[in-house]
Image 1 (cartoon, rainbow, N blue to C red):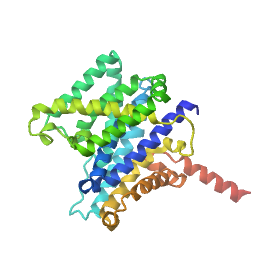
Image 2: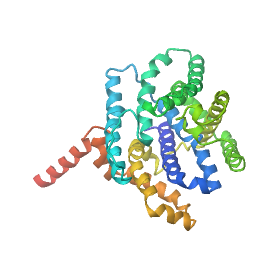
Image 3: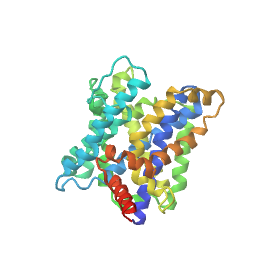
Length: 339
C-alpha cells in the first residue's frame, strides 16, 4: 500500500465515523441547536465526499464481467440486507405486518442501489467531455426535483441528485487530491468549516431535507419554482464542504487507516445498533443527563467494533458473498488437530 492509498483509507475511515455519528445524534437535533447545526454541517459533505471517492475508484467498467462483479458486490448484499432489515424492523418496532419491498430501500441501504446505478450510468457519461458531462448531471439533479413521483422508490431521487459527485470523482486524478490536501489549504478549509457551522447555528435557513436529496421539491418548499435555486445552492455548499474535508484528510498511515478498507461492513451493520439505540431508554437518559457528548465515543466504538476481525469473519458471507475467512479458520483448525 502506498501513501496515496493511506490518504483514501483515512478519508473513508473519517467519513464512516461521521455517518455513524450523524445517525446517532439525529434524534437529539430537534431540541439542541448546537447538535442541529453540527448535524447539518456533517451532512453537507459526508455522503457527497463518500460518493466522490467511490467515483474515483470506479475505473474498471471496461473490464470483463464488470456487471456481474457489481451485482455480487452491491446488488446481492442489498437484496439480502433489505430482507434482514425488514425482519429486524418488524420485531424491533412491533409492526403489525411483515412487508418485504425490494423497491423501497430500507434507511441507509439506498447507497447500495444508487452506487449500483451510478456504475451502470458511468460508461455513458465517461464518453462525454468532463465539463459537459458534469454540467448535464447537475442539470438532471436539479430537474429531478420537479418530478413528484420520484422519491425513495429504488432510491431514484438520490441516484440522480448525487450522481454529479460520483462523476466528478471519476474525472479527478490522484494529483488533484494531493493538491487539495496540501498544507497551504488546511487553515482555509478549517475556517470555512467553522463558518458553515456558525451560519447553520445562527441562521438555520437550510432544512436538512435538502441535504438528503431524497425528496421532490413539492415536499420541501411551498413555492416549487424556487426549488432549482435552492438545490443549486446546496450543490455549491456540498462541493465546497467536501473539498474542505478532503483538504483536512491526513496522508500518512495511522492505527485507524486500515479501517478504511472495511467501511462497507460498518455502513451495512451500524443500522442495527442505531435503530436499537433509538428505541431504547439509553437515548432518553443521555438527553436528560446532558451526556450527548458521549455519542462521539459511542460512534467511534461502533466503527471499531463493526470493522473488527471478529465481525468481518462472521459477516463476510453476507457482505462479500464469500467465505474465504471461514476457510482460513477451518484450515488453521485442521492444522492444529493434525499436528
